[in-house]
Amino acid sequence: MQALTETDVEILEETIDTDIKKLVIYNDDVNTFDWVIDTLIEVCGHSSEQAEQCTIIIHYKGKCSVKEGAFEELAGMRNEICRRGISAEIH
Image (cartoon, rainbow, N blue to C red; front, side, top):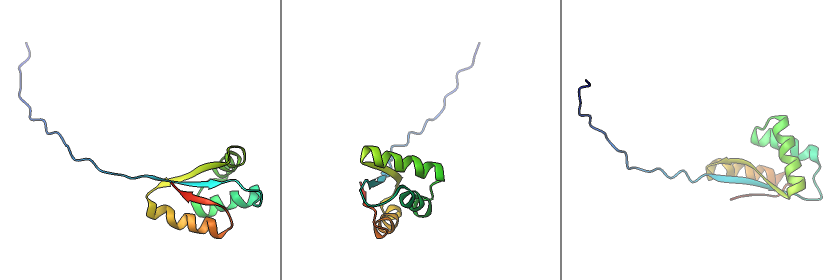
């Protein structure tokens, strides 16, 4: 026979807003695959494989979400990407 024991259970009701944003790069007819790949590696810290896959998605789908995070984190990346002549927005 098992003994019944009382346990106190505390329920956390606090929620934390994470407000995750996405850095999206758009396709254009100006920038080369290599330029976009190099930019993703240098600016976003992508591996070469990840950067290549994102670039292919950008080419065929017209855009790709290349990084997620807080707005403050993505804003500098977006500015540098745009400075390099690539169209990018934070959503």
